[in-house]
Image 1 (cartoon, rainbow, N blue to C red):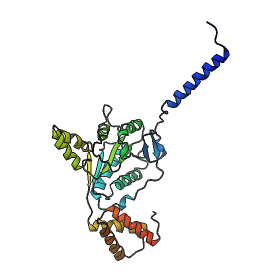
Image 2: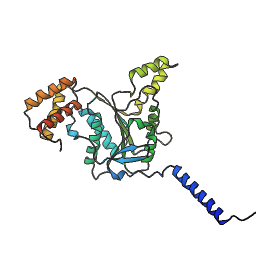
Image 3: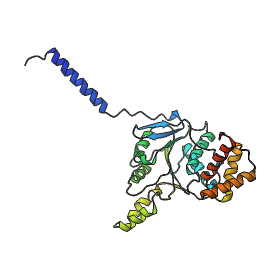
Length: 295
C-alpha cells in the first residue's frame, strides 16, 4: 500500500480536528457546583442548571406583617429548627389573596438569619418558578452535597387542566430512593388548599373508572406538606393595624384621623381589605407626601 503523502495526512488531521471541535460544541456544558456562599437568596435557572444570586431581596420587616401572628410564629419555629439542623417540615401557605403569604416566607428567612447569626451557617432562600417545577429534582440534586441549608420556595403554586407536572413535585418531595436532601425544605404559597381547582377535581371524579382513586392521587400532593398554614381575609381592625404599622415605620407625617378615613375609602373602592391593599395605600400616601419608602 502506498504511503500517505504529507498533504493527505494534513487534510485527514484537519478533518479529525474539525470533527472533535463540533462534538465538543454539541456536548452539554460542564455543570459547576452551586456557590451558595455568593448570596443569601437565589433564583433557579433550569436551562443553565445554575443559581442566579439575588443581590437585594424584595421583602418587608417581619414586625410589619400584622394579622398573621399564629401562622407567623409557626413558620418561624419550623424555619429556625431547620436552620439549626433539626427535623423540619415542608410548608404550604394557602388562602386569601394579598394576605402576605410570600412576604412572610421572605421575612421569616431574613429574621431567622439575623437571630442565628454566628450560631449556624446562613440559611439560603432559593426561588423556583411555577413553570420550572419539573426541574425540581435536578435542583435538589444540585443542593444535596452543599453544606448550607436551603429553603426552596415556589410562589403561587397551582395546577390546572391536563398539567401533570404535579407528579414531579410529588416525587421530589418524597425524594425517591435517595430521600429528600436533609439540607432542603420546600415552601410553597397557593390560593388553593389542595393546589388544584375544584372543577378539575370534580371532573376527575365524574370521568374516572374509580373516581375516589383519581381524586385521591391529586389531593395527596398537598399531603406531602407537613404544615398547612391558612390565611384568611383580615378584619377592619387588622387592616388598620397594618397601615398604622407602616405609617410609623416609614415616618409618614399625617394625622391619624386622616389616614384612617383615607385607608377605609381606599379599601372600599377596591372591594377588599388585605395586606396588599394596605401596602398599595401606603405607596399612594408616601407618593403624595413626597416620602421615599426606605428604612
